[in-house]
Amino acid sequence: MATTLPIGSTDAQAASTSKAARLRGLLQAPALSFIMEAHNGLSGKIVEEAGFEGIWASGLSMSAALGVRDNNEASWTQVLEMLEFMADATTIPILVDGDTGYGNFNNVRRLVRKLCQRGIAGVCIEDKLFPKTNSFIGENQPLADVDEFCGRIKAGKDNQSDDDFQIVARVEALIAGWGMEEALRRAEAYHRAGADAILIHSKKETADEITGFCESWGGRAPVVIVPTMYHRTPTRAFRDAGVSMVIWANHNMRAAVSAMRRVSEAIRRSESLTAVEEEIAPVREVFALTGQAELAQAEARYLAAAGGHRAILLAASRGGKLGPLTEQRPKCMIDVRGEPLLQRLVRTLNRSGLGDVTVVRGYRKEAIDLAGIEAVDNDRYDETGEAASLACAYDCLYGPCLISYGDILFRRHVLDGLLAADGDIVTVVDARRRVDASRAPDRAVDWVRCSRPFTGSYLDDERVTLEAIWSDAAGAETAHGEFIGLTRLSEAGAALVRGVLDAMSKDGTLDGADLPDVFARLVAQGAAIDVLYITGHWLDVDDAFDLASLRNLV
Image (cartoon, rainbow, N blue to C red; front, side, top):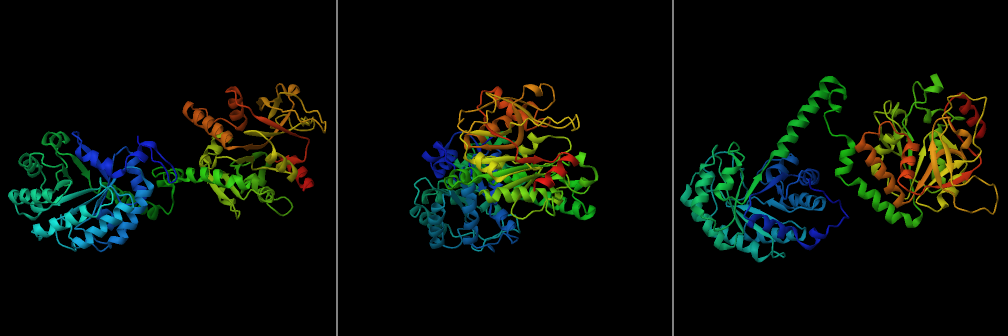
């Protein structure tokens, strides 16, 4: 599968070879090549992701995407704007359906200059009159004068700023019913005028006209075809005929029409999303296609100099031990002296300069609607753990960043100390080892054993690293403290965590894992996790006892 590089990325091969040169290579190669229709940046990314080596920017599809007819009702500048987005979003060459060139030779030469400026690899122009009519509408459409059309081709070639820019001349003689002899005559004239390839078009249901043309043409220039009407023809027939390139011309647009109509009708009928939600792409895929991860990387790179961190808050769980308090809202939204717990946590983050906050929601997610946060959803919150919730925020997991449970509060000096600490992964450990006999035996505690215990000495600045982390009571007497659910990552640390999430996803352990499992795996891999010891000044919410303590704290 081809990998789409988002805006801001580089690729050595792409940098050394222009898109136009790669299109020329496809046209001139002995092997048959295929390019796929796209009509905007998103569909262009999907075409590249599917592994196609080039994109056909269809005039019909782009017009349809704008809601207008394929009769040059969309101006060439409007088309050019769409092409600019497509070229920016993809790394493979784009061959543009340029209709008739939008006018005479003067329009064509200006069009070619503008296409070259935007990194478009080539344009296909057809020998019809402006404004054009789609080839599949009506019969006996008028064609351009041969000499006049040759002038359009020459003007385009004379004004291309990239020597490799490709001009494909589309011959409509067979479509118009003017016969094979006329098609061959026109193709030869266009070839002599400088066309880099010939697109021979037919609307017959068989490929007889196409194979007949290729046989007579004899390979004088690359031949391009659009088998929309003769789609039942086996591909081997095109190879045998010596065709250079096949264009799948409008199928993404047509597929989108069918899918959108089906989904819209289903939602209207049911007045619910239940019937369609599992059938459509998750929002995370849209974020991935539009380069959200690259933006996160760029923010980490360019905002880090100003001390910028982002925060990811894991707040998907209900908090069942709080009983009726969480029937209508998740525990992160329970009231703490007139204010939701989560809002207090976000304010603490903001006061320490963390303005970019993403909350992973789950149970009663609609109740989490605070201003100033972004939200991603773990809709499988009731069958997955903290690691899966963190994976839902994968596109935000680029350092420097902070990961926190969404049901804790801490004094601001704890956060400031964490942000100032050295290390790629730094986690906060409460050295008081809160073992309380009055608490329920199933009290959830993440125990930590470190490279050395907390000393309490003001002058003690020896590095402390995490050696083991576990969540059950067994071995609690050997622990050096409790992980409070707060961790800072550098850019390198975030990459390590992403790697563990990827590995867990592949081996099937992600759904059942919690954050301590992620850290345990990092330790097992030899990663250094630094520890910042604290002694209190924080609380989490697990049950009514915690809630009462929390209300006293604030």
